[in-house]
Length: 346
Image (cartoon, rainbow, N blue to C red):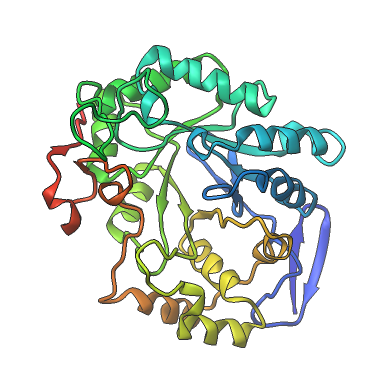
């Protein structure tokens, strides 16, 4: 028999697999001294008028970690949802809210203006975490995705502003008190080392695509050593390249059946087992609630799910195949060998 302590309630379970009726309620320590809830709600790839309801449902059902971004173009909806749940369901302090600086605002003036616009959209005075969304700058002043003037189907990159320049701007934003912690997203070991070497300031978080087809073991190990927490997005994978969803994988379904869980719960548990915070995305009430019902994998089940990626590596989110195309290499992927430019770190 196992007792799980969640806030002030004790749940007694007899299942050897710890199938829980809700989130385990765990938080993970950041290097800054604050904590981040283990499970959050992602809001990427949500259609207009879906997110307001999704956020309200999530908070009413126990979620306290919300992941947002300017480029998702739905932060105003999140703001409307927050008005419905603060303070009637939670206080602002009980929520951990992340947003991200978009590529067209990597320069100091645009960066603070975008942060202010994010806070305005959300109806908040501060963010718990603000991330550099990508290690890529766009030319500012021409919208979120500026078109290249001579290369049709490409974005206009800012090749002058370095990652270190942007990180120094983020440090200044933290000093304003409008953000409690700063971090990065989609950064490699080389990118993070460049920031730390130049400024001595370690990102609190690196949010990355992470699932059994993309475990990123070297990056995870480096971040652990450096004190950079990992948040995993797309924990269920996706079908950008026409591959079957991970939730349909036979090994995942086998583990799920044995645990009395859903495949999505198993994939979330895989990330948690590795020490991440995990932000599954859904706008459907049943899935939002289901994704928050945690299971814990034993070592055998963890290894079974991990084996899916052996010899079967797949990164879904590669900007060089976005439309419009970003003509820059980020991850040293085979697909990126045709890129004209590389990341300007310093």
